[in-house]
Image 1: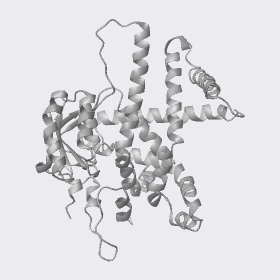
Image 2: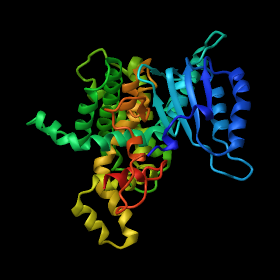
Image 3: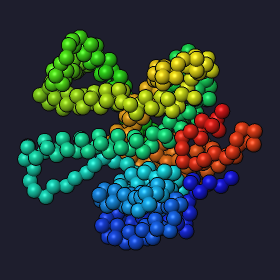
Length: 393
């Protein structure tokens, strides 16, 4: 059964072709307003662009997702890269409610860039470095919010193959995350494998650094000011770096060490905020149907209703936390260097939902368009994560 929420429609479409700038905004605004005023059906955005001004891209997205005077929901966006989506255009592609790539298309991600016409001083350089760091962190977390369902859906749809991966690597004991990464690594191009490796290194540093610092932080007693808590963490990071580099006689804080200390501090704060976030708890509840055994589900069902969510989070978090932490690391890795990806790369990394015309990839549309038997209920509604659970049960 065809589902318009997952199908491009050339009759309700705008075309992002060429450099994204204010001229493009001016050119596309009348077409967007016209489509918005006709009805609230999905709008397709066809993309073939080298990127451009982030501010112009964001303006287009805001225009495309605006409500109306009747307070109607925003039109659903179906984004389609036909040839090239780079930089700001790649961000626009991933911003779609359903994102599609033509088989031979490419997608390029990189971090925030800036140019300066005036000579740089130490003070300006330091300020720029801080601004770029914060901007990249913000964009990484924004990307995470946009594509988290796609990435988790990849994890869930490959979970049935984890036992095969474990059997292949015996006697090594492999976690669910390790099984998942082993599976998708085989499907990636070399540039995408480098991104995956960068994410692995960042994730491993998360884990190592977190364990080291938290041991020290547990000794903090009483109500401490934020600065006092940060001071304990910084001292723990200093000890961690000294210990990690003890075999390098030339290493010191005067050079790369001080930069590493700053990186560690931001890395730790970012990881702790992710670990403790309500977003992770919500994801634990949302995906619990796939991650709990029948016995665990029965145990939760016997609890009073007001205790079920907490118990669900307690059971699911040990499985989902590593996947979520790696996912955040991946979004950051995409902000580093030049990451030129194929359509299949973008699919397996959770950046898009489907590769046009390719049947061997587990696209979400296959579930969205699946018609349940009369005994189990009516056809699935598109646009929500819950239909993945309904179709799988």
